[in-house]
Amino acid sequence: MKIYVTSVADQAKALDFYTRVLGFEVKHDIPIGAHRWLTVVGKDHPSGTELLLEPSEHPAVKPFKDALLRDGIPAASFQVDDLDAEFHRLRDLGVAFTQAPMAAGAVKMAVLNDTCGNLIQLIEMRAAA
Image 1 (tube, rainbow, N blue to C red):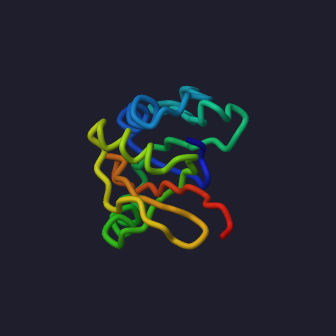
Image 2: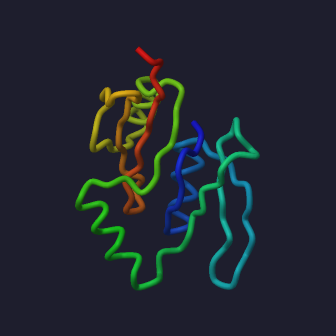
Image 3: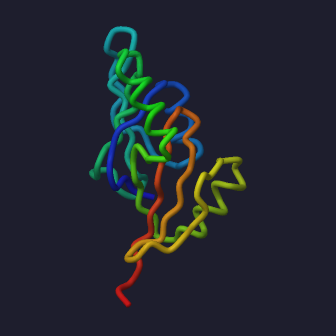
């Protein structure tokens, strides 16, 4: 799995989900007062795009995240090679999906709940027909 588009929240909870469940690796973990500059990357893409696991204490964050969640809008999109395999692997780990894998033009996609108040879209690029 690699990060396709970025940003997230509750650092400890997010760190557990994004590393243990999704399989990302920590790239930076730098203490900054009560929080950390905490980023993860895809295991096979250590120099790739970093996902910032950012605290969500700013007053604007909760209403924004709640609105995205309520409207079913993913906060980030991650690219996978085999969506069906990832769907089954994650579902077997107890991950809740709001959208099972479905074809959508040039991609196949699914949407999961990251347990931190965000929906995450998984996409598989499909070969041109």
